[in-house]
Amino acid sequence: MSAEAKKIMKKKKQQKWFILGSQIFLVIAFIGLWEVLSAKKIINPFIFSSPSRIWQTLSELALSGELWKHVWTTLYETLLAFGIGISLGLFIAILLYEIPVLAKIIDPFLTMLNSLPKVALGPIIIIWSGANIKSIIVMALLINLIVSILNIYNGFMGVDEIKIKLLKSFGAKRLQLLRYLILPESKRTIISSLKINISMTLIGVIMGEFLVSKQGIGYLIIYGTQVFNLTLVMSGIVVLIILSFIIYECITVLEKKLSKK
Amino acid sequence: MNNLLEIKHLSKNYVTAKEEIEAIHDITLAIRENEIVTLVGTSGCGKSSLLSILAGIDQLSTGTFLFQKENPVIGYMLQNDALFPWLTIFENAILGLKIQHKDTEENKNYVRHLLKTYHLEEFMDKYPSELSGGMKQRVALIRTLAIKPDILLLDEPFSALDYQSRLAVSEDVFKIIKREKIATIMVSHDIAEAISMSDRIVVLSKRPCTVKKIYEIHLSNASTPIENRKAKEFASLYDAIWRDLDYVS
Image 1 (cartoon, each protein chain N blue to C red):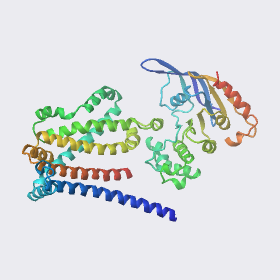
Image 2 (image 1 turned 120 degrees about the vertical axis):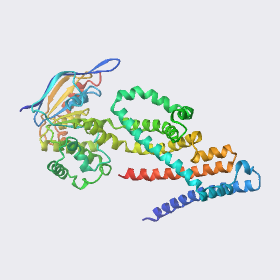
Image 3 (image 1 turned 30 degrees about the vertical axis):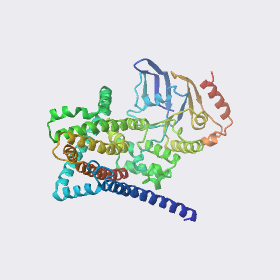
Image 4 (image 1 turned 45 degrees about the vertical axis):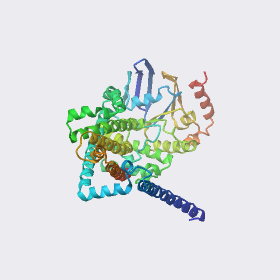
C-alpha cells in the first residue's frame, strides 16, 4: 500500500472516531447539563425531572419486574402488528398487481386513507374492537398497512418493463412472473418497507396504548401524565427510545442478511 | 430456400380511451431459413410492435403470420441485456429453460457448452455486475439460444452499448447466429449496422409502418460485420436506405 493511501485511510479512521466521540460527548453533555440544571433548581425538577431521578425510577421499575411487563407488552403488540401488517401489505400489494382494475378502483381510497390522521379513528376503533389489545393492533395496522401496501405495490410497478417482456416471450405465466421477477426485483423495496413499517407500527402501538391499554410503555407514559409524575413519563420515553433503537437495529441486521441472499 | 415464416397483410391498431392509433399497416413479408433480416425505420414507426406480435407478447389486429413449423420456439432479445442481477450467469442463461420447464440436465449441459464456446465458462458462477457490457449481451443471447429457438427476434439488441462495444458485440452476435444457423429478424435504427449484418433489409415507412422497400444485401467479399463495412457497395446502400427512411422531409 502506498504511503499516500495509508495517509488517506488514517485520516478517514480519525474522522470516524471524531464523529463517534462527538456523538458520545453530546449525549454526556446533555445528560450532565440536565442533571446540573435540575440539581441547582435552575429548571424546575418537578416538571423537567432529572437523569438521576429517571435512573432511580427505572431501577425501581426494573427491580419490581414492572418495567419488563410493560416492555414485553409493547414489544409483543409491536411485533404482532408488524407481522400482520407486512404479510397483509405484501398480500394486498400482490393482489393489486395481479388485478390492475382493482388497483385502479381502490387507488383514491388508499390515498385518502393514507393522508387521514389515523388517531382521529381512535374512538371508533375502541367502540368497534373494544378497549383491549385488538384496538391497539387495529390502530397500528391502520398506520402501517397503507404505507406498506403503497410502498410494495409501487415497487412492483417499478419493475423493468423489458424484463417483463422477456419473461413473457419465454411464455411465463403470471405466477412465474411474480416468482422469477416481480418478487426478487422488489426485494429491496420490500426490505426497506420493513424499516418504515416497524417505525409506523411502534407509533400505532403507542397511540393505541394511549387510548385503551392497562399495560405497555404507552400506558406508562399516559399514566405518568395523569398522576403528574413527569419522571415516570420521561422514564417511559427513555425506555421507548431504547426499545425503538433496538428494534430498528434488529431490522437493519435482518435487512443486511436478506440483501446478501 | 424455404420460407420459415410468412407474414400476410398484418396490421395492428392500438386503442386508447381517446383514440385508435394504427401502428402497423398491411405488412406482408416472408422470412427464409438461416437469413438475417433487419427492419429499419424511424423511431416509433412500429417495428418493435411487429416483433412483439411475432413473439406472442402482443396481439395483431388483422392479417396472419404463419410459421412453417408447428409450435415454433421463438427467441426474443431486447434493447438491453435484461439480465437478472440476483442470478448468476449460469442461472440467467437457463432462465428461459426454467420458465418453460425444460431445465433438464441435457439442456443445462447445452447451456454450459454455449457458455464455454462463447468464452464465458469461467464467469458461470459470477453475477452480471462482474461482466462487461459486451459479455452481458453475449449471455443474453445465450439465454435466448438455450431454448433452441427456430427463429430469433432481436429488438435493437445493441442500442444500450457504446459505439465501440456495439461494433464488437455485433461482430460476436453475428458470428454466433451464423454458426448456430438461426433465422433472425432484427430491428435497428442504425443503417450501417443493418447493412453490415443482414442478408436483407426491410425499410419501413413512418407510422403506421408498411414495407417501403426490401434490399437484398450482396456485398462483395462478404465477411463479418466489421469487414462488411469496407465493401465498396456499402456507401451507396447507406445513401439509398437513408433516402428511403425519409428522415428529412
